[in-house]
Image (cartoon, rainbow, N blue to C red):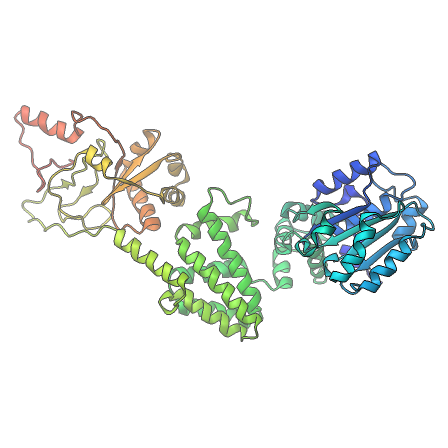
Length: 554
């Protein structure tokens, strides 16, 4: 009879256990030194190796030829335990044997000496399922068992165990296995099985297994049913996944408030037999990735995706307000709960998607916060009035007063009253000094995201702003950079436009003026343009000024 992969490749020694060194190393040291406890408690999520380590420990304490803490696997005891013929190793499923009578029977058997081995080992799986009476019956035996008895308790819900049981056991916590470790194990097993498993496919299976190697092996076994050449597409079809590109398109429809596109994507996925509950979980996971990128400096190590998928997530996260992302996660969770209560899955998902695209239809607190955040950004963005058009005869290029800008970085305005980016500029009156601009500026919290957005235009240009910060005073964005290279780059019109686009994408500011942040500038320090104008007057050269009384840039 065919043996499934997770049974066929169950580790036979501690060295083969994946991702649990904090458990295996300690147990091997105890076995080597002879410090064997009478009761062990293995706790952790499913599929992380609790029962596997319990079986290895049961063999190791009875092995006739222990090798560096690992059972030899060759002696009569090891082979008998592997075959299941040794009656001194008892496995009990507490989910179906949870009564007082079952524990009383166990206590009576424990008094007898082992028939073949040195220790009689009781492995009680899902021990949290025992009744209160069963726990009480087990307590005395667990505290002072016969010298030839060892108890190994395993559970996924350690919080349900009484404190009296916990205090009598040596506890080992099993962690979720890292995706990279799972992917390496899957690749090894696929090679041994004569199959081909791509690296991206192994990583996708590892991500879907959520730290459980047993689940990963079960999914790989299912993929082998489609063929021995397993690719990302094979995994997606087998698991019924929507695919990152569909999730990105759905998120894009939400961010652009396009319910028609979102419903069309949903209809296409439904027509492809995608389960709506699974789609809700996948979309929630996608939004979680956006949230992590949005809130962390480097989320690459936490998000288990390919490099191309991460670049797509990073680009979309820049234009996604955090409130929108959190609202989406809450809405998907609510829809999933309704599906599990018996609601029509397609209707619940479509309703949730429409609420995300049109938050004004949603009266939840999360939707209201999202709408307030949008209004705040709209109110914070400066509004400009058009400068009156000049006659053709008197048209001459003029400069907006930039009291805090170095020479060559002034934002210019054409004779029609528009800057190079095409945005109308307001007419300025009195000139503000650099000290006034810096003193009244507030720190721009979204500046790291602006620099990140600048990478989409030029990674090398964005690198010049590493370690920089920015401040806002009205429509001015004042940059505090650790080197002059950043300001030299901003003297180029194209780079100024790229920076303005990045600021607009992240903050919503329709128009901004760029300059350096220089608090405490001496009063005697004059703007280079102003000094140039004074020198020109001294030389008897007539200076043409704009309406603010300032000389033009050219």
